[in-house]
Image 1 (spheres, rainbow, N blue to C red):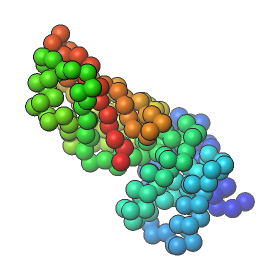
Image 2 (image 1 turned 45 degrees about the vertical axis):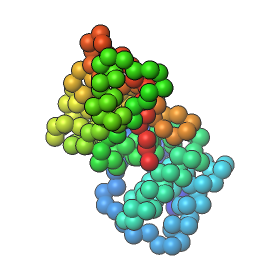
Image 3 (image 1 turned 45 degrees about the horizontal axis):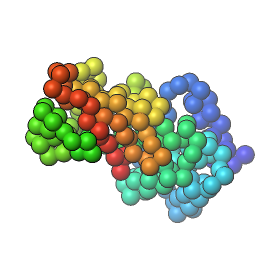
Image 4 (image 1 turned 90 degrees about the horizontal axis):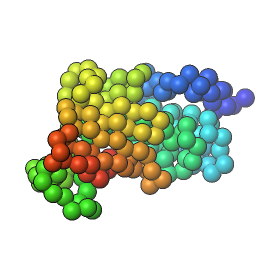
Amino acid sequence: MNRIAQAAAALLVAAFSWQPADACEEYRSLSTAEMKEFRDKLVETDADPLDRMFAFEELNCSDNPTIRAYAVREGLKNATDPLVRHQIMFEALMQKTRIDVELSKAGKLKGGDKRFYDKNDGVYSREVSFRDRASGCIGISFNRCASNASLIISGDTVEYTHGAMIGVFKLTEQNELVGFLRPDNRSEYSKIPAIIRLF
């Protein structure tokens, strides 16, 4: 059994535990042969999903940030299995230092929605302050996962909460998180169409 097959078997156990795969304990240097092996498996059209997930995890643990970025982009572009896509989405979000929510004016904004859009120049941004991989949570104001200032990742869905602001986003075939952001729960505010880009 080759290295990819052995590790894929271990990932199968982790997949059915309903926990995200662990982060890299440490980044490591990959040899040219290893990078080629993992790259080929990542983009192989008919690869077993667990083999592809393992290849992604190995590339994502590279000490080269260019390789890590490549793993996310190419992994999502080539993956169709939900388990693999959700894991890559999870890793892409966990690597972010800032969450940018791009607001849309596709529908004509009025009242509070328009003021919110104009105040933020169409992009609502918050720095990442905390990450809890076990619970799939990203904190955006405190050094903890506060229920009123966080993103919760579950499968292909992200729930965004910041004070009275709420949003829900889902991973699309275009590899973007598409949904809405409602700036406030007062009646003058509504759901503004929005996107969170993974890369």
